Structure formats: C-alpha cells, structure tokens
Image (cartoon, rainbow, N blue to C red; front, side, top):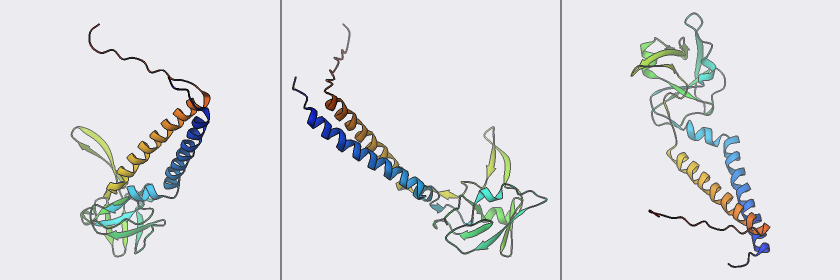
Length: 186
C-alpha cells in the first residue's frame, strides 16, 4: 500500500470543507431570501385572483373576509391581485381563488373591486377520502427548474462532504481497508 500523505490530506480536508460550507451557505441564503418560496409559488395555473390564504382563515359565512383588488407585485394584508393562467404570482401569494369559484359564489364572490371570502375551508371527499379543501397552494404552478436545482445542490453537497471525510481520514493518517465482497455460492 502507498504511504498516506498527511499534508496532502490536510489540504484536501480544508478545500472540501470550504466548498461544503460555501454550498451550505448558498442553500440557506436561497431559503432565507425567499428565492425558494418564489420558485414554489412561481406562476398561476388558472385565471383568478392571487391571495395570501393565511389571511382568510378567520372568514365565516356570517362574517366574510373582504379582500380589496389591487394591481401590485406584492400582497400585503387583505389584498387580491388579478392573474391569468401562466402569469407570475406576486410576492406573499400562496394560493389562487379561481374565476369559477367567484362565479359560483358558494365560497367566494367578486363584488365590484372586492373579493368576499365566506368559506375558506371546506371538507370534501374524493375516492373515499375526506380532505380539507383550502385556497392555500391551490392554482399554483411551480418552477420546473427548482427541482433540478434542488437535486444538483444535494448531489453537490453529498460529494463535497464525502471528499471532506476522505481528506479527514487522510489528515489523521487513518488507512481504510476495503473489504472483499464475495458473490455466489461458497
């Protein structure tokens, strides 16, 4: 076996540690700046009004929540923004109330420049399962490249951490002996 070079192992450990930390920082930075959220709530998959569904949770039939219709790139408070299918969703949006729901008028209705939501949550049944139907995540299409980015970061981080571990064992002078695998009958 070849002699393990501890100086080379130390350099390898430090380089791959720095790359691992840089990749971790990049992933956390993407999360903290809202980049990942904007990739999830990327564009509308239907015509309707983009809303922050968290603001609708206190609505009842007796006391509906009124959302003022605005033209904005960001939803603040009780606001709704008109969107067409395929358009980018505004910031702070986490659901879309469809035009069909507004014309039905059972859960929400459009009255002039105000969207009134009276039933933000309803229990539905499909294929024998009951579930809570809310406006959260409804009508949202994600950015397809976000999945590729996610897999690339995970693979890159796994590779960097593996190389860092290899550098660590070399730095300490630990020689890892490979085991023999036996295949077939003995």
